[in-house]
Length: 263
Image (cartoon, rainbow, N blue to C red; front, top):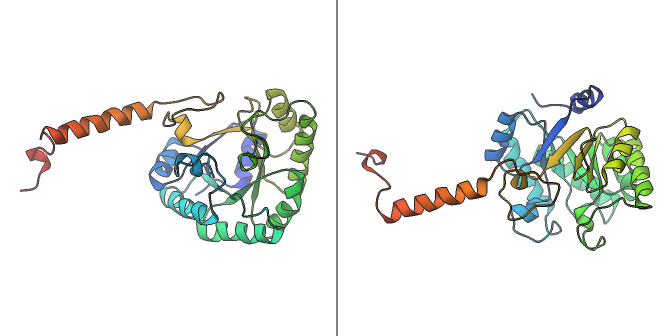
């Protein structure tokens, strides 16, 4: 049985840290579940790590629904959240409500995640009223990469008060949780201390209720990664060596062996 929003809130209240990782397919969803990770995010980061794009902007509703379906076939216990991609809610709240409902119905996940502060509060309210749980996302919001002129730390100087105010507004609107990305540690602590809901940090220091990383970054599959990423494995090197051994075994005829053949 999957974790629920109530379970996540209990973890936060008890001071038990919440683990979250992005996942995009059934194979890794099974491994994530076996590892006991609490939450999965079908992130629009799939545009970078799956589709090979320079940013997340081209990811579509159809893309996230497809990957949500794949993930849900591979796991049953993590609480699973799907990103609402760029263009699915920026045009109007009506479009946003329609997209959020569709993602939950067709993707089968438990909640959606929306980037933005005060401007998305009316949409968050409408989605929650419609029965769609919403996770907020503040700080560095990758869908605004062009507006932000790249990927930079947010929340320095006067920006800090705006982000803190937006966090409170999102909680009041009904967000059950919040991702806080690439902000100073002190600001993340200030925001978490001011909220009842769990803040999940990424590049936001250790004082949040939980942490999220992109799967490919955490496993050492990415060619490069931001400062806040810790590589917990070097799967790229291991995979390259294994594939090199496979190719050599094919070339020299040692694979398949007689024991690997049918008679």
